[in-house]
Amino acid sequence: MIQDSIKTWAFPLRLLAALILGVLWPLAFAPFNAWFLAIILLFALFWLATTAERPRRAAALGYAFGFGAFCSGVSWISITLHNFAHMDWLLAGGAVALLAAYCAIYPALALGLATRFFQGNARLVALPVLWIFAEWCRARFFTGFPWLATGYTQTHVFLGGFSAWLGQYGVGLATAGFATILLWMLRESQSRRALLGGVSALLVLSGVALAAGSVSFTHPVGHKLRVSLVQGNIPITEKWNTAAISQILHHYVQLILQTPNNSQLVVLPETAFPIFQTEIPQLIGQLQEWSARNHKILIIGIPEAADGKYYNAAMEIDGNAPLRWYQKEHLVPFGEYIPLPHLLGPLVHHFLPGLGSFSFGHGPYVLPVDGQKAGMTICYEESFSRDVRKGVNEGATFLLNISDYAWYGHSIAAAQSMQMAAMQSRQEQKPDVRDTNTGITTLISPQGEIRTQLPQFVVGTLNGSVQPMAGKTPYGRWGSLPYLLLSALLMLLAIGLTRRQSSSRQ
Image 1 (cartoon, helix red, strand yellow):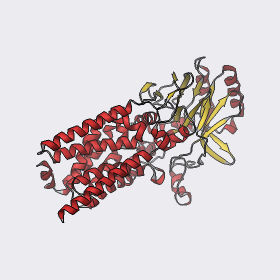
Image 2 (tube, helix red, strand yellow; image 1 turned 90 degrees about the vertical axis):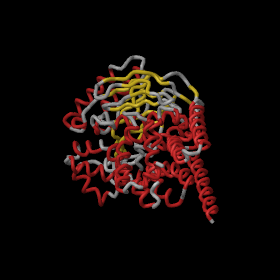
Image 3 (spheres, rainbow, N blue to C red; image 1 turned 135 degrees about the vertical axis):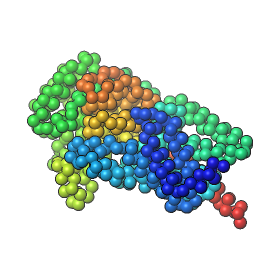
Image 4 (cartoon, rainbow, N blue to C red; image 1 turned 120 degrees about the vertical axis):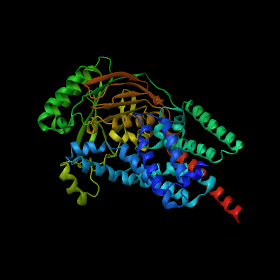
């Protein structure tokens, strides 16, 4: 059998194969969107892992896969480190490799634990559960890093139908489960009954996913909201140049004044105004008068200075009403704040002086917009489902994110982020309004479909409308609990199979 022939491969060769599979992993995500590749690559990795009878070797295969995946999939981080931290490419690449070395621990643990505690069919049941649970943990420990999670590959296809029920981790579990069913069919290829059972299981899984995706838990509320999303396309090198601030403010004011008369909401991207609100009271007063006169609400990305602290924030101007704020809560480590500042602060400030000075926000997580509620996130907060749910739990009827991906240049970072945003819309069945400095500025439907978008790296305004939606999906109501319960049931099944197999040997 092919399975036996793989066991004869020298272990370094299998390790190299796992590394290559990992390097290919980002192709399953945006902008490449080869979603089927996620199933194929997991099938191949799990195939390699089941040939490793020693847990350490299985863990090494998982580590090689994870290291290759994150080195290739988030290599865009090196662009920021090179261009703005002034690291040479070798040092910037080393920093990415260090992050990949950390992230690879999670798939290593998944494969190692599956091999240590489970055998035969029980291992096939445990593998997808441990794989996705490791991703769930990676998104939580040490502030979390949810990039390249399996479920996001299925955002726009049939397995994504589970998203409103189980969230993207449930979608990932179905994806990994699909791969293990194929592996089981291969292992039992000499049994026609097993092949028929495998095909039936795949058809049932696909059918249930399609049926699950057809259920609507939210419903339209109120009238459509007409929005104008301003994409300023300000280079980072200019944005934080104090000599250019007046020109940047003028640039955005002119774009605001050019928005259509029927727009009800005008949005500017993250830190569009690169100056504290306390330094431009006259301009803010003028914008309040313009808002009142034109019956338009403005949401502007601007740093907030309050109570001796600084926040990465969104400021809402609604006529002459008091200003409302959303303060970013989930900050980027080593960018917006510095972990262990007394120890690491001097090193970070050597490369990026002045960074790491923002404080953590503390809600509220919605801003009122013409009788509706916008569930707010800033930048990569939208990549964390638990952060998006905070606004939904406060009654958000649509999602609103402001970002700036100019830091990552002409890379795949913005496309990866947009794919994750689309999954958030599909999980919550709420439309998403995304305004970014250099793109991708877009409107996303409650089904996760990209309705319209601006090209990247152009100055422009995206005008459109969104239909606010009331109600909650099961995921919006209970979060990861249904996924975790399903995973626990599958693990109990794997444990039961292991005990049965042990008893049969005695």
